[in-house]
Length: 352
Ligand SMILES: [Zn+2]
Image 1 (cartoon, protein in one colour):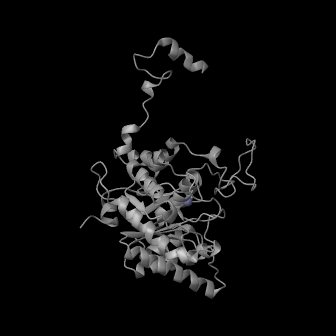
Image 2 (cartoon, helix red, strand yellow):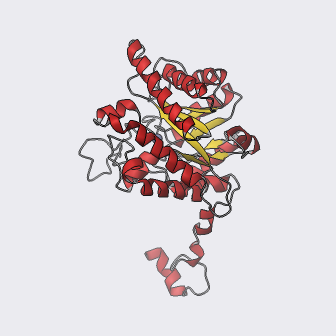
Image 3 (spheres, rainbow, N blue to C red):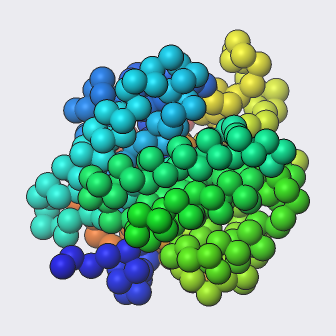
């Protein structure tokens, strides 16, 4: 039997690349705003390559791209009939990449994925019941297609996260539960993120933590409270954007007046965030901070690029296949130290 989620985490950090919505959009295969992962049906070869690139950069987990691939979202776009084929295809693609030979790496773990339904309403029992049914059917397909565990993520209602956890537990797979509070720093019921995490652990989550919405700077304060509140492994998968205390999530992050061509829809999210991007060293520094605090389930969410994952892998002491292509500035034509580079060209560097 290959080692499972908890056995791998017992031995040290585990890396899980996320951010498939933004990466598929950036490559031109998914519509921003709508954010439905039809790529699993329409361009399976592109999705497989994204998975492959993240694995090559150091991801230990291939997360099936079923984020937003739930019944409600498929109703919004009028394609409910594609729901089950989309889920099953995404899981099959994840499995195929997780198990293909790559530079002598062990097989990657396969994660199923369920997420916020955007219909949860504590005052509407029927809406909550529908959300539970959506979780159950998706968890069932993930188990059926051979997922090693299921990630439940970007929950901003505590009760919705608990319902998702129950659905994952009901199919007998370990659950990684990640919360994503809005700018008020708490779950929508008013429960703190730490308290919600503590309850999820008590209800059987294998890993709890946070993902998406927040960059490293504004995820950290809440994340460190989560770490102090639980004894299970903790997950940290921020977005690679420079969120601030005034603008703690990427939904309302502004470009501080530097933008000459603002997005026609009036906000930087989700298509004009580029100038607010974290560089790879910021992501590495965040990973190192997490490791020092014993936060061991690491990755990057929307906006992630394979180079971010490579930095995290190297921060964990790994040498992923992509390490072979890390920067070699010594051979640059102006800034290099290589003896073949003429002094005149080195001097040009300051005036370039
Ligand atoms: Zn995200």
